[in-house]
Image 1 (cartoon, helix red, strand yellow):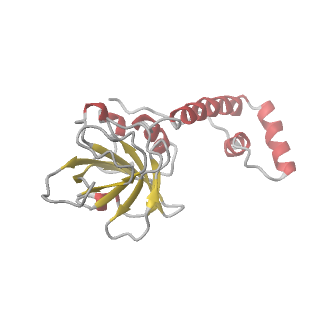
Image 2 (tube, one colour):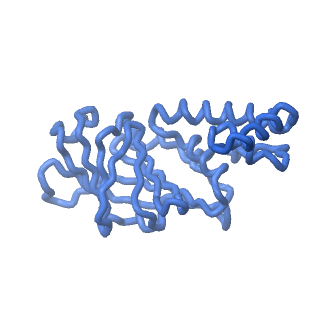
Image 3 (cartoon, one colour):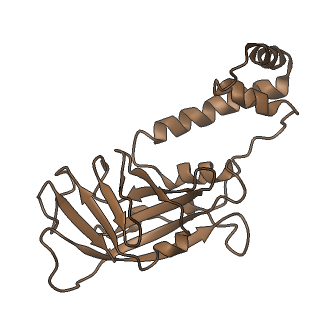
Length: 224
């Protein structure tokens, strides 16, 4: 798939103010008034404001459901150049006798990119998650160095509601909880460090229970 260009062209030198105005992030009244006056007079910033409306409408709509690769590609495109994102596949394995209500997976980092190097032309939309086996879980990861976090986005062919899921990763003391759309965060680590890691998932609702998965409301799933 050809990489989409989400960058907004034709910006003027006051475009940052226009973005802050759209996001209602200008606190100083005089500065806000100057930004509004400039917007009335600048056709470039008017187009930017319109583009922002379209982009954020799309993002808000997408975030009401499991986060798509297309949404994450957009987030990567408009983020800092050193932002890195990647894709991890988790496949079930038989490790013999396991704890009650526990399932084990093997995780493999499939792709990482930060806008440089041989993989810079790759985007997440190049990967068709809908073709994954029904028992596979995908983790999309994106760095947020400003907050020292690694953002996690779950995807499963069988699941659309991740509300209540928790994650714990071997070597990290903190656990994290996922939103309904499968979004969570952990302390910042390299995405490659998710390869061959033991990751524990816990979900508290029964919607995920299907096939050979447990119907117990409190269930841990270990990913190896």
